[in-house]
Image (cartoon, rainbow, N blue to C red; front, side, top):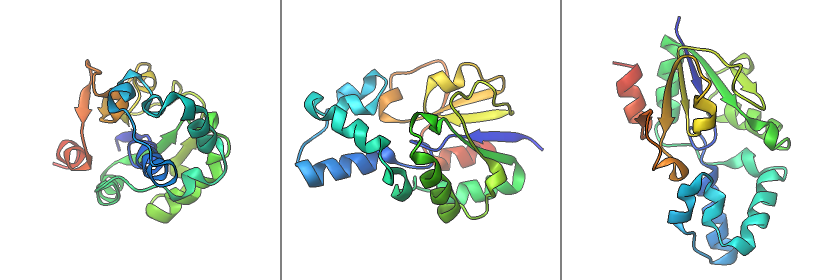
Length: 175
């Protein structure tokens, strides 16, 4: 059975959307979408608030209640029937996220088991036939077929086959 490696943040979970919504509600501020293109969506927030945004990301509970990317549940359920699916997150950067992410996955993707989840610092050791991720740094060393999942911070990235949403992923993997 072929293996698909699937990232969490900005692929099946929407931390950026959650942070923007929280920022609008608590600070009434706007984000600069153009600044998000430089590799991190955090740069889209006003410079004087970027440390606060990062602290919120690092704090306990942030990753527990993130919105789910549209169509990801239905498509992953079907993928799980046809492929060996692993959710792989480079979560070690945010140690408080580990429990939150696992609980979030089990709530929203109950058809996956804990054996299908890997939290790591680097994805260089991960192997499979396909990887779907929003960061080039995770795709560069991958030996299988990489797909970049569209996110605000990677819109200008070229050189990878792109998946814009989960309906497109279904077209590629579930034909």
